[in-house]
Amino acid sequence: MLKLIAFVVFMIVLMPLHGFAQDKICEASNRECIFSALIRTTGSIENPIWRDQSYREIAKSLAADGRFDDAFDVWEKIENPDTKALTIRGIGMAVADFELPKDQYDALFKALRARSETITHPPSYAIALTYIAMAQAFAKDDEGAWATAASMENEALRYKAYGESAEIQAERGDLGAAVRQSLSRLEGTYGIAVIHVKHPDVLIAARKGSPVVIGLKENEHFVASDVTPLVSHTKDVIYLEDGEIAEITPSSYHISTLSSTLPRAV
Image 1: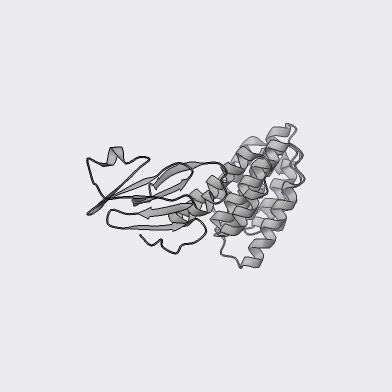
Image 2: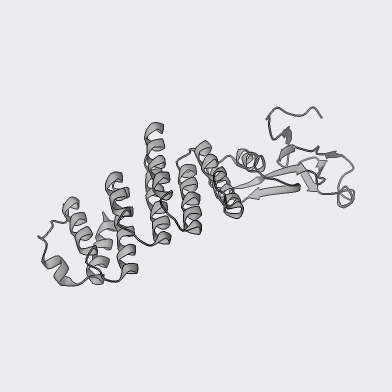
């Protein structure tokens, strides 16, 4: 409610006062009336940038109220492709905040995707898809997020969407799964070690083409691309094979492949 009140104050400052004077007075608790007045008044804004930005905030607020169809209707009024993409982000994140059944999530993300397909400016379209993938990840629809990212033609933005989806998944608690799903979609060679601020005692190492060595020692482990920097710490090492991934803590390690979580016999 406080967000809506703050937004109403912003709109009153932004818009001519006579725009509201022509409408009936809305009770503060009558959100239907307030939204209707905001939409009507926004249509009278002559500056297209301000008008689109106001529609964006209205659509986000409607989505936060759970009024998704109304939010989509307001989205249709926006002209600027970048603002359309940003509004898709706002609606998508609002959708993710709700605890909804999977079929309802699927329908809403499908509706967002259908609207993104009408954005004719390629960079804005790609950004809209990135935002949809992020919203799906926040909604714990990891498969949907990865599928949306994989459908993107722009390679740089596709990998950005992979990264954003993995980051959100890791934030939720499963760093290993996030890295595994990301690497399974990468092309080329790598020798990589991944850490995350929310998982300070876990290190993920993986190899495809480039060497990765794990140094073993009681209550501590090391990762390097060659055995040379490890010899002063330990003589006990394990070399990762191509396609393998290791989840390492100070006291343990687990080696498997990208395609299977079954442990490698060491």
